[in-house]
Length: 296
Image (tube, rainbow, N blue to C red; front, side, top):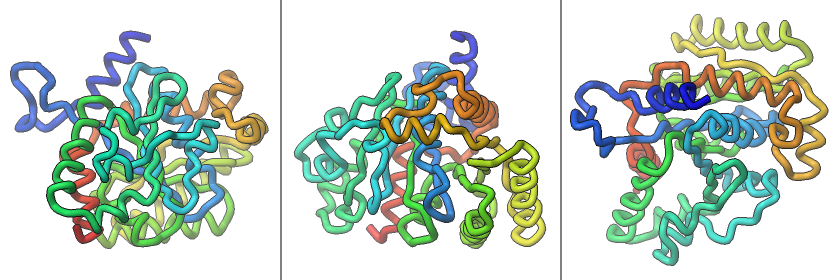
């Protein structure tokens, strides 16, 4: 387990040669920032975000989640934990970055966004610089930062997608979910055809069904958008997921041996066996790009 954790850490912290610290001190360490999103609601995006975070933590990585679903923030609901502070407390200098991070299970941390990003548009430059500096500290604290966005194709959601180094797109076998997932991919392709997009098919009835959906999305995206999607994995329908939501406990903790828990563990391993983008820019780069999309 320790060897696997060390291998994953090295993968997470891989950078292009011109960004490496030759002293080996790790002072230039940056986190891998991944936006988890979906074309429509109800596909299990937030549930996957939480359980993926737990799976990565179990493999020895330091993980944080930013709940950026301003309309229906559900990270705290699924954890059964009420955060004392949100991003707003950091923006207004009332709390520091360490204080606003809420403890989740298995050593993961999460940060409630609230209406924080929208508030950034209204603050003065001095506070803004201090805020960016504070967020930059996340690079030193974590190996992975998962951004849980709202569902759909709104400008806010697209801003988070485009600001992140990588995208994890969740869909289900429902025709509307597949159509909306492709619509989201199409919007990304118009902005950046090199944006890494991983596909997870959730709530599939069989492996065959999951593979067919993933293959179909990959083929049409490559053919009509010239954008290559990556098949990350699938999670078959599992009663344990529904039961775990009702008691506000992640399914990988509710029943670690269930099929969904095994699948999310496989997905976590596959995700970090991939070579990260050479243009990986970490928390600081993410928040800087996000602010530019919001016109700040």
